[in-house]
Image (cartoon, rainbow, N blue to C red; front, side, top):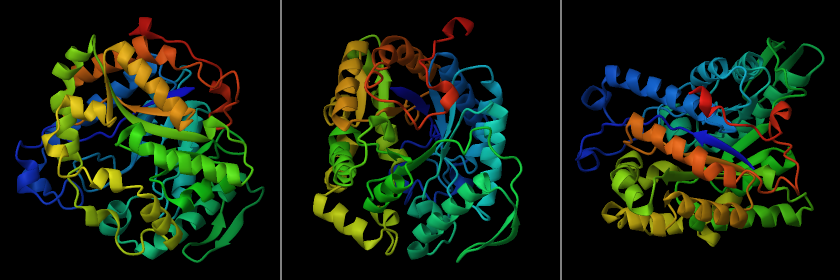
Length: 415
């Protein structure tokens, strides 16, 4: 089992009445009214400190992603963060998981090949190369990508990047969306033929198919917990089974919000308001932003509607603003409590979802820096060691940097 700390880098100080006064946390929140560059500089530094602390505490990977024009998670270039992480963790057996650069909005896509090549060389071959399709908010509403072109652009960018990493000779690329006369990427990654590729998704049938066809790891990035995620992951494993593909749990990943304290009662006292901040402010996004016409291809749209992939969440939208700690935990949106509670719930989730790569969101919403460090400390000491042996005796992880596939040891004593 591999466990990575995922960080969104959100704005931690939105006003109490944010969701009443503003249309959305994404795309159109006005910087001039809400943003404070001095505070944001502090957030970035806290975020890096928290991820590096997690690496030293024994986490298998540290993980960032890309989003634009929002207060929910604003790392417009995750590779800037990744470069700091790669340098600061040199000498540690920790993966730098970029989840990552959004392919359709990066032009030309060879920039992703180059920047990931830089990260893999700086880190000494510890990169996991995430290749996201991107949300409609980022790709369509912020970057102006026509929705029906987004997936085609993604496929072409993916093929170009992999060829740029593996071709013996300089080549010309004459694609539908990208035309490059001489592709000759410097540097190429240390990992050969290329770093493991992870494909994040939200339950799209086409993304399952794409990840399976290329033997990449599929990662379901959900904020709605294992109960809601079960439908998506059951569908994924059924898809894998029907095609006769090895049902190796390491070909799948899952994102989960986690909060650990000395007891269930203490967890409620420490974390409740930050859970409420995350679901009420950080996810204050109009539903129509998610699915502009053409963003999902017809097969995926039909599959999601028939199986009610998002129904469980949208059905709860009106209730969530009134939720307390117990509601978030009972619904599984956040796995929180004392160490034994969190261990048991996470173990059940891992087995029920059949996932070999777990990404834990240990900074939630408005959580202050010191509390985040406490959560990392409690999780890595009291919970993570009980998860690590899951699947290891039965399956080999082909989707992790080869030099890091053995179980790593904590370096907490160095903190």
